[in-house]
Image (cartoon, rainbow, N blue to C red; front, side):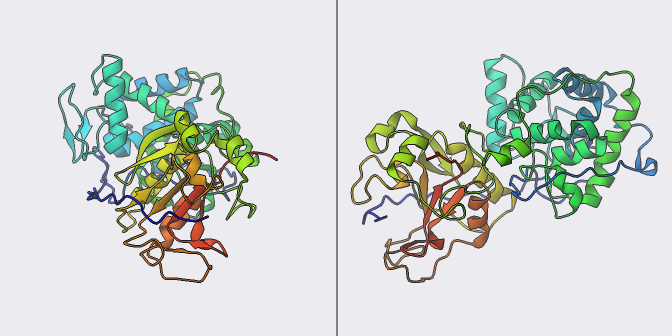
Length: 421
């Protein structure tokens, strides 16, 4: 794959924002919120229920009404009471189950428009996730602090970007406990076997250890479950989400749409079957290339820089960005290149022609710069950290720096979809 000699330099200063949840009367976590990544080796297991000695006597003081609203909302969507109680465990730690909560420990007036850089609401949304909440408020003519609005937005996220959470809840429905629901909704945050029930795409993940989750989150889930057992009936089931085991077996992103990523690793190319897609396979997977791809190209961003990507891969690029931000990986992206309308020197075999590839930080020269393109395949220095490479791989992207020849250290291409043969 030959690189063009001239690429447009895009430089934007990235503002790194620390993410801190609000936690009512509970100790504030020092870890980041909303950790988003996948573990392709995850397998199911059922953690034991929390012991009675860890259960608080009164649940979340002052928010009993909100707790009941939350439980009735999610059981009304088909969840069991045990599944719904996991929301209470996490919301208590994040916001005290207060839709008006803003970090640090502030309760804002009704109708407040969230501050992009301050965690807000029941689950302490930040940055672009706040934007989605604001948009839903505007389109439905409701206040951002409306608890029903926030619950609707949670359900919207769980059916799009965080669908793997619903899949995990449904996959373990039969053996569900309040503790398991809390862990699934929290997401992976360690290597303990109990985390195997959770999708590594963490909806509420804070980076807390398993012990911390059990001490700070699980007790409130158990207390809510015990209080409303026999009062609030289980829902009939979560419809149309499938299960994580089915998703893994089919290899990933067969049904990816903007804002959603189901891929856990490449199934083609580097890191997958070792074979890049042919032109016919690229067309089968992504539609026509070059100028013909325009109907399938959408405007997006990566680490603050504008990119034009195929609508089938933009969700998995966002998943990479979420993991990078959540892990606080110290690496500044100030150059990106994505879809190419004209083939130039690359030819129609390039993933760039279909909006399914992105180049990062090539420097002043693509052949000798920071992350060079090396036609003869010889090893050269590069500065993309391994954690970035891993984040891309975790969401279905192959890295050109791992090719035998040529080596393309700046290049990532999406191989989380199997086009068939």
